[in-house]
Image 1 (cartoon, rainbow, N blue to C red):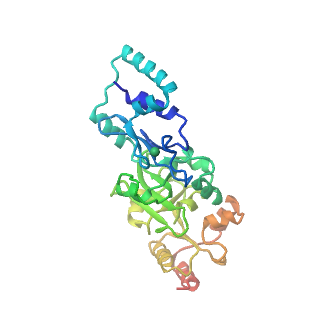
Image 2: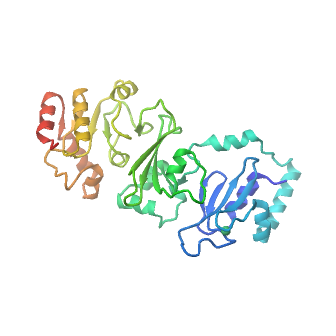
Image 3: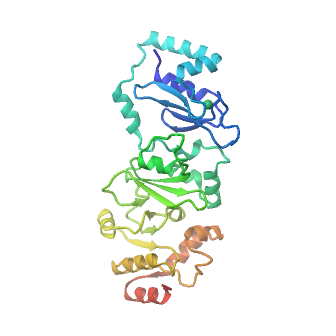
Length: 339
Ligand SMILES: [Zn+2]
């Protein structure tokens, strides 16, 4: 009798090449049987996963080696297998090895809707997602909770199983949680390859929620800054980011009935969408940061300011010094827009 927990413990112990945890009871690595892939060092098609019966399995999409994890361990890692058997025997003596019911399995699957994504901390230090975060100067430690990665965002988004012919869609995944800080409500995949379209793809876990990142971070008693992108919001205090188009202003006001907002939209006088959103903000009586004389060719958003060397303090001073609203604000936008 195998025990899923013991199996999983040993699966993690094995020195598998380029091992990545893809969720509870799922590992991806370079297959030690066939060494896949010898031609492309980035490719790896060995998997350890749990089947519907609660048994940990081994499968390689290259050589087709397919067996239970226990047999895989016995045939390939006899030195580990000896300890494994000893441990199983002790477990059985202590108590009847915990039987995994179907219910348990579905629990593992729903326990976290983020299953299938790899947390940033599990990636090797030379990974392209880490390189991207670094290039945008994102303080990874501070925002670790929200940062994930997957090779197959599209398939994950659609709930499809990963097969050998599943097209790669490598994305940094930015997760938005509900006010409780635990329930994931959205996950935005940021394309990491040049030309990969769409650049941002948002997955919704729940239909009724506002498409907002940062609900678990804001203090409604203080002024809330609202940006277009999550990365921009990461550089501002008490901030929210709107995902996938414009925010539902009514829903926002209902969610934060007594809060004051400042919208910090992108510096895009040529972008009709952005300009229209600015107008909506003003029409609804909210305050808007006005980019004024900042050249959009130099700086198009908050992240650009950070990359150009502005400190957080500088940025806040600039925002506070250029807030518009009402009719005067509307006039300013009309003079500034280039579309
Ligand atoms: Zn193989």
